[in-house]
Amino acid sequence: MKKICWFLILLILSIFGCREKTAVISAPVESGGPVDIPITSVEVLQEQEFGFMEEIKKKAAIIAAAMSDKALTGQVVIAGLDGKKSLGGTMRRLLAENLPGAIMLFSYNLDTDKETARSLLAECSRVVAEASIVPFIAVDHEGGAVHRFGSYVRKLPSAAEFRFRVLAVGQERTLEEIEYQAFLSGTEIHEIGITMNFAPVAEILTTENATFLRNRSFGPDGDFVEKAAAAFIRGMSRAGVACAAKHFPGDAGADPHTAKPTLDTDAQTLDMIVKPFRGLVRDVNPPAIMISHVVVSVWDKERNASLSPIAVTRLRGLGFEGIAIADDFSMGAISGISAEDATVQALNAGIDMVMAWPRNLADTRRAIERSLKNGVIKRERLVEAATRIIAQKIRNGMLESDF
Image (tube, rainbow, N blue to C red; front, side, top):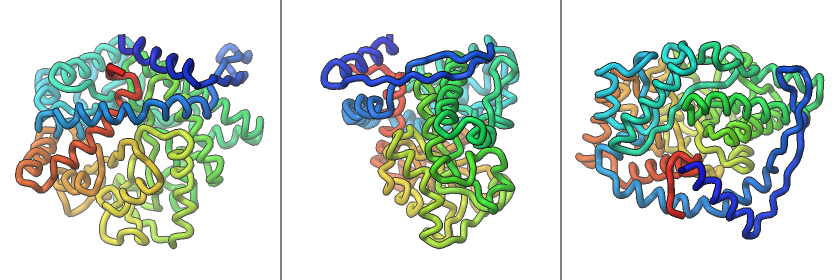
């Protein structure tokens, strides 16, 4: 029913003042021959979306303002998941009691067969949706080595493979292939139940971050990185998967999983590094952007970007209105502070969603609720964050609406 409603919205908008322009691309398929597929132009997608995004945000704000404290504090949490075949009693209770706004999955959850994975993801959604709003079901699906599924989902090429593809077929053809491959793969993972992809990496490859990013970046050319990431997001979006581009504003030499990276550069160089994110916000209005744990010395010498109101303000200054997601606070880049305290700081800094592993899911949500009750976090801040989250769920066709 909700898919039908979403289709009708687009149809009505296209009838009243939106002439649909289409292009046809020839994309390679596994059989070896090309297949022509119609794609809606970027301009038309933007024209359609801008027509009703304001209404979506109004509806989302009404829903968020009416939420209970428990549901509101859960909505801003992305919960990790134990198990892979079905929810055990403990995990089921954790989800039911904490009502996360999203659930993230890894290889150990998804290394099964297709039907088992589909059943698990449906069960996760059902448990949360029984008492709150349906959660995003999220995964890192970048391509290359970052592949969380069993053999039932084919691997996407790495970002680096597409970069080298430019040498063979040219940039325009490569961008078409990126969008098409993202659409195919997005359709495949959406059928299992995935609704959010923590991808693509929209960082420019530099001599400093190459040791960490390796083949996860579309390369050193900022213009191509911007266009390739946009093509990836468009393809996934057409398949019903919302993307979270990452990691704003960029990374430095140290791996944030184990150490605190510092991006020590001047404002002009930083502006160049941020270029792909600026272009993405302008061209495809990404549903989410993940903020890294890097310390950007020209912005904030003391705090990781994921904890810095200055960094979040810089992101919003690009015109970004989607969900600001913080990278995992259990990483080594966050030191001298508990994950729970980091969560509260991040939310007050303007972050909209934070991650929590099963072992600290309950403590994280309770820390948010406690901070809400004692005034450390204002309810208005959580309503603002939840409004952005819910708006993207409506935009992605996950929630029915009455307009």
